[in-house]
Image (tube, rainbow, N blue to C red; front, side, top):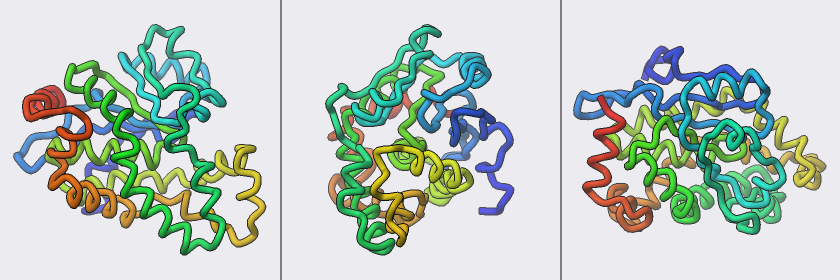
Length: 262
């Protein structure tokens, strides 16, 4: 795909101050010559540090639903308090649910960058299944057309990246374009790393002179390839994953495409 492909459409990137990696998933062409609608589905980093101006910009987009893909402890430590005040419905995991918490990765990743990269590849093979409960909420709302909808995790890269990839895949976007969209997170890698370093939960990792944790910051196409391979090897297809793990059947996928494609 050329550098001026749909991933670089100026409508995609949302300029915010306290939130990063915020973008619209619209505009991508599909294999049946349709296009993902703009202004329906957004993804971003965590929203708790949004400035007043950020909040105003997000509210102006008419958000109806926000799905927080972070673990319960992550959400409690850095809550988004403005959504409820603004009357936007939101969902998150229970406070004690630690699925997806980065501290679990750090406990076994401080060996070498190579070992961490291998760990991330294994993690991506598990994300669709570990995050199925959260993803089911996202896609149930999309089937119902509760849009505009925004989903986010901490950096908006891994859990959000997989959710976006699965959505674009069932809408019929090419895998090449899906990878290009995923790799956009590398454009804010410095902000992802700064947030990671500033988090007191990661103090032990930051002291590692080998920077063994560095691959945790990357959006690596090999990670996403491993995710799709795991879904297809365990379920046969992405559509079957939606049925078995997310409870979205063929009619639901049809409704999803009707709502989100033009």
